[in-house]
Image: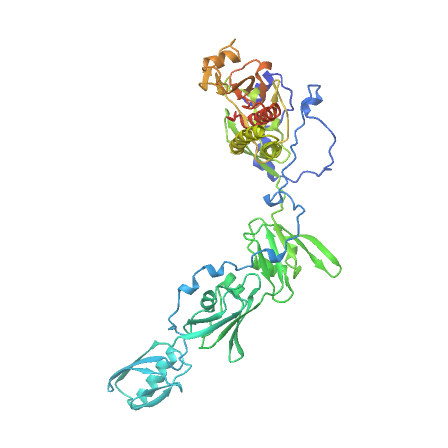
Length: 575
């Protein structure tokens, strides 16, 4: 039997929906006709039938543009100078801890290097030959051989040619660049610690930059780094190529070279649905949208871009689909916000409790509670359909904020109050300690976000929201007694017993109990005063604590907050 049939037994009037609307195939149909967002001041369907009007519930969607469901909201323009530069984490990778040996295939020989030369057969020779100041090595029988600037393969060919020119037959030759002279390179410009640092000729530029502490994140450029030799620029490095593609120029350093990090160029701020919000440096004063997308690491689902900045004609704020953004021009000082802004036509609602079938349903965005319940089968004679309730994230956030506001007012009102006498000051100290302990415990509690939709055997046909959890409770035979009683326990429901009977069966009240304030929490989430209700199976009796203070105003305030917390969390906070 489904929930609808059981509700009909309870004479609950609601529109009947077709269960098949839950099928995902309906979600792929054509988009529904749009209508005005302007809404009349209306009441829920049950209220239109002449029933008792209930307090209206704000069930408007949660408009968080970062969720990928709703468009961007107004926010202050980001200052590029407040964001970390793209590549800020580059010099945490330990480049300085990995000095190279300089002996790769492309290394070019220079004076001071050592070359191992071995020959056997018609000519026997095995020596380590230094490269002199003129760039030569001396081979007995062949004379000086100029090899400066040659790589290992070229050195081998040159030595082999020199020896075989004298001993043309039956000679084998082997060469190896055995060692290189260390170099000292100056690192200056906008780096953390300018200075002179040691390395090998073939060490990476990153090795020397890392030794200097890396690029100054506020002033240094990641895109304009020069290697200067004898007042001439021999290489220009753009670290964005390394960060994105892994490519970097590998100049061979010489003793006395200088690495100069230029001042940071114009920049733009990039945020929104990106993996990391960064400041991106421009080469020149502008770049295209396609170039920026290649630099930024976007999250999946990004569909739109908000571009804000200043132009000669004044400030601009333009919102583009991602495919149109590629051709746009971004200029220095602009802010670019990427967003996943495709409005979803479906919501996902979860079911818990006593029911058959799946626990999650994908529904149209305008689905109502009655339509969902009509499609859910439940165990007959085992389900308390009259006690259906709903948990909603927006309600939980409102409860959390309301609790926090109440606790903050409590702090402001009583913790800062002045005392006119010593006796009053001592009382204030005791009250302050009580309040502080109470606030600390209260702030640890999490509101349930429970929305009461069942009342007097009727269910409000509210519109569902994404993330709602609908609770269909099972019929219970027990009563839960908790709060300020001696032995909190669950007891079997017995017709004819009242609240005091159950409390006495649990050992009676504690010394801290407020016997005039006892709550009954229904299965549907409603909280009522015990004096005004008839107990039902599944109810929870909650005995509230009395405020331990003679200050009537403080006691009244604490009692109000205790009731607020009990409604939101179903917990009686111990004072």
